[in-house]
Length: 409
Ligand code: SF4
Image (tube, rainbow, N blue to C red):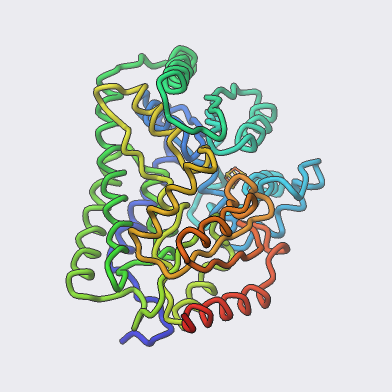
């Protein structure tokens, strides 16, 4: 039996743990099997790397694990002491701190630590920090760091931008062939892209189920369920798992079962998760009978432009249509559509101190959207990983007051 303040768990989650466990086991075994390891940013050209037989590792996923296990706050000062400012990305500082101190949650999974990179591949579509982060390891291990430089504040995803990004991605092929000792095969890339597209379409369908009232899944579940979309897109394992999860959620929606008992309010989460406080926040919202039904963050792994007929251009389009690298007016339009689609009563903005790139409250967007949509907003100050920047008490009080405000309306 589930009480009103317990999370209503998803049966599929157990299988997801199996899928993720298999990914990490294969990652650890890769070098012994003669596979080269490529580190890739979360919205980097993973399909290309996978098609060329690399072991693909995503350090942002490790950053999120360091945050969720609350190891990050102790590790960040290690990186700060080496000259990485406390004001820059706390994924970067916690990951580098973890490397310097030799402590990682991966040790609990039987791994010594993250696999050492043979090559690091970035895409600056998110921020400059990912390149600086990768360059630290490139210097440390004397390995190449290559990537794609995406412009910021993109309006139209037009021909010249797509052509440039596709050429930059294609230019990675030759050095990767030399490093990986493998020949690039366009048909293999198409196969991976088909699987990646299938994964992304399923992930979208999963998130879309939360448009039902009551929502069968919330943002807090999404942050856990997104694991395969991040680290396993382009594989059959991710596709198979998401089919199972989607079936469970569609059944919940058809039966009118909400993730939150007696859902009263629906909120949109804009910005990064507060990884170290997911459980506390999830519990508070559950007690307030408020479902956080959607987020920009979890929707960032939907790439409808991936196209096996045009592998490089499709990847280029997909990876620059990303919310984080778009212009303010495009972001605003996207938020409007999301608010309508998910029938939200209000919008919560997380101003993450060390991630200005993914904090969208800083240039008047909350005020403009509130005026346009008539939806109240709340800004909470915190961080993705550095819990020294997060006030539990203040956030709790502010969320309570916000939901009271929704009730009064
Ligand atoms: S987008 Fe933000 S959280 Fe992600 S790597 Fe860049 S600075 Fe860090």
